[in-house]
Length: 284
Ligand code: MN
Image (cartoon, rainbow, N blue to C red; front, side, top):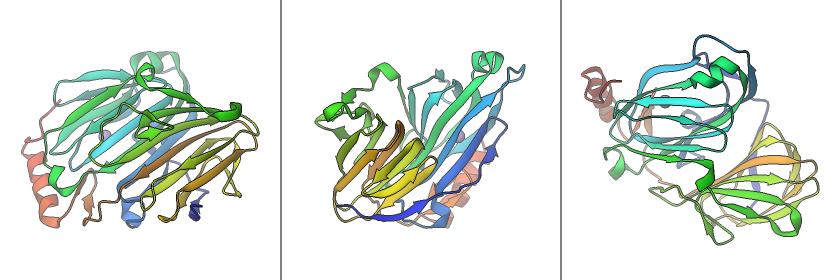
């Protein structure tokens, strides 16, 4: 059994730009217990009225890690310094490896802004191994239809496999180190046993519903971080529940971050700021 190390709850929302009302469920600035994950922002569900102007976050850089955007409701539009442009709708995942540097903007899509509606999404920051931090940037635009769904035994619910492997089914995201990312939907009274890699960092974010996690009550919006020892996590839903399950191999490397840059040393942060200011990460 994988024991729960601690539960994160009662996190107050704050706005990122004018488009993303997020709860930051963890951040590397508070320590390294989530290594290789650096940050997880959960936005919503939040209802937006129809608007003329697109809400969001304007041009900004990233270096040294990956941003993973998972949209559950609503629609985002993305534009970046490599010239790529796209929309991310319900069920879609954008796995962006900023690595040596990307400049991008993140807004509600034109259609979503015009029509209004509910936004629900996750943005996860995944650290890169030191040797990959200055690799060329890479994008994986993964649409809902590319993400395999697995029916859980005994009609307990379904799992969407974004990354890693679940019950022999592999997710489409390519990762630098071993990572599992699964979206689970459990029916009322549905129960499932998860096997998470021994020694890896593992956590669950409850987006809706109430459930027992190894006999500990957990509800929306709460996060359970597990101990690294043990493998087995037993979930038992009390009501219809949606949750995100993450596990990852620790990097165990120094983490030095400032704003949108996460590197290994102070000197590398100074370089990142200088490179961005000199336009070496590109422009929109
Ligand atoms: Mn960004």
